[in-house]
Image (cartoon, rainbow, N blue to C red; front, side, top):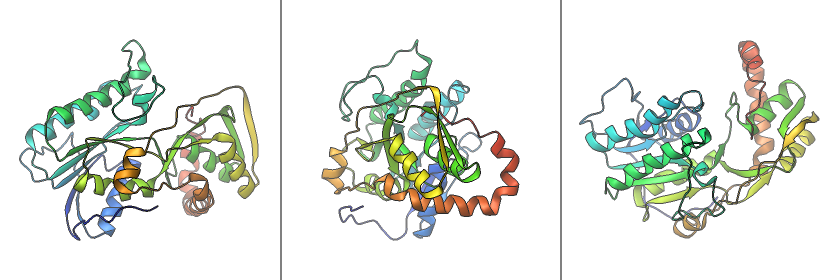
Length: 299
């Protein structure tokens, strides 16, 4: 990955909201390693009114929004409103998602979006867009929005597609998938996200940025790569359906930040090694927990 030379001070204060999630945890580790101060409050339990938050990474959310719709709206909208209205900060980056493009064929940041409140799956996108609208309505030039696709990395216990199949290949020596091998979507590697977000927060010229690899990867390529390394077997469910999405535009971040995305296929071997080390050390502890992680997220 290559980025333009942007001056970021050696020491800054960051507030990471959503620090218990995968991306938030990785951000906290990354920033602390760089020598920055990291404040990781629980926004539902701590008042942040009047507090100097420095540079805010707003990654708050809930993993199972369909089962927790009120919590999802609270995280995506209500807590954001409190920060924008009552807190002091130097910059804020709000994490939205690529799901906002689900009902259109184009994925440029300024495209008109379509949502249906009668579709329960649209709750996520509607609440994220409400958060985006609040950011824009704040008229604060230091507030930015990023629309992330499928962020992947060493998220060892996740139910999402890629970490699930790597975990099953290692623990069960078998991958069973419930979507067709021809299904494809965009995977952006966590290191790319960690490098890019601070640059957007400090020097971003625009309001909204897609953060993606810009290229969809077929499930078949991922699974064949994993099977080649682990020698696991592969089973495709008899009722597997194909899920495919338009490729996400990264024209803006390539032009402004000279962004060159990591190819997730190039990281599979390293991810497998890291997963193997993790489960070798943690297998006893997670033996019971893993029984509850057998159902893979539907792509």
